[in-house]
Image 1 (cartoon, rainbow, N blue to C red):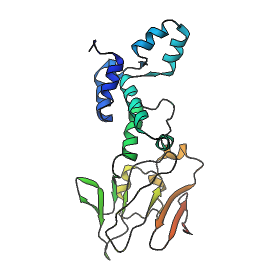
Image 2 (cartoon, rainbow, N blue to C red):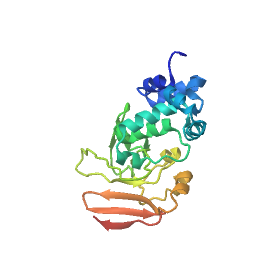
Image 3 (cartoon, helix red, strand yellow):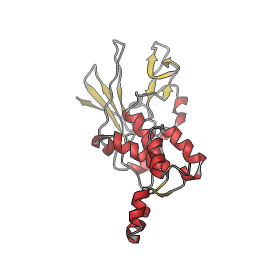
Image 4 (cartoon, rainbow, N blue to C red):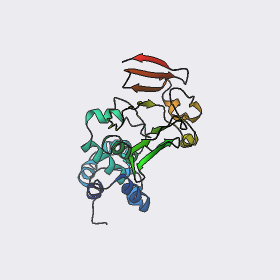
Length: 233
């Protein structure tokens, strides 16, 4: 591997998935250790100017795999997508790349199903769910674990039912929300399942849940898990 420059390693790694980038970073110190990501040419130029070399290494102290993730992100995302995924200080570029793919390139997946009446159409496919309602069932909810950071996110659904669905956004929840026997995000108090870290980052946002009811034209909102309010769309 000594014959490969850092630029070559980064270029090749940019074809990998975030999972494979992380595996490489953990398997080899050269791939995973933080250091300056300047190229061989730029290092020769920096040798002529010691001060610029120090500034460059201080501002770009990331591993080769982190550099690969950053490189592929800068090539793939649009300005709108970049603004929707602001990076927090020294946050991993590999993690952001993984989140970018989940949000903007992969189909929406429902990671958490609440209530026995809500199931996957195919256990190997988390993009399709089915709810069988009867007098014996209670409210069921399918939850996607993608977390909005900023900007506007859009999603489309294909509904194979005359009853329609209520869809919307809510505060991120913990894994054990699946233990609930029923889940109606607007009517039920789900504060004990909220992610505390998310609440700390978004202290100015008081809306915990907002659901759209297409067949009535109303939106149901709940602030800080208080009683919901109706808003005509």
